[in-house]
Length: 90
Image (cartoon, rainbow, N blue to C red; front, side):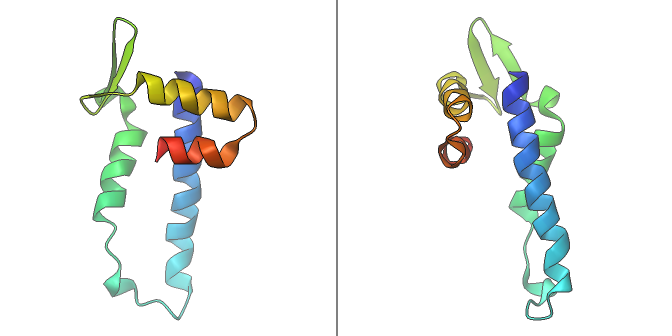
């Protein structure tokens, strides 16, 4: 469980870096960007204790059972299959 949250936080950190860099690029008009969905995701990830729970052997995130997805993601991460890890978490 801790590894999964750590992996998600690493992905969020990478996205935050991109979000910070985008306004620097003169070719992009910042007023056209819509970060609403991203900010919702950040809220879920930054405070998983508000959205993550375990019931028996199931992991529930945002009212959805994600146990099998987390298991597959961790297996991919341990096998150094990082693209697959990211795809599963997405």
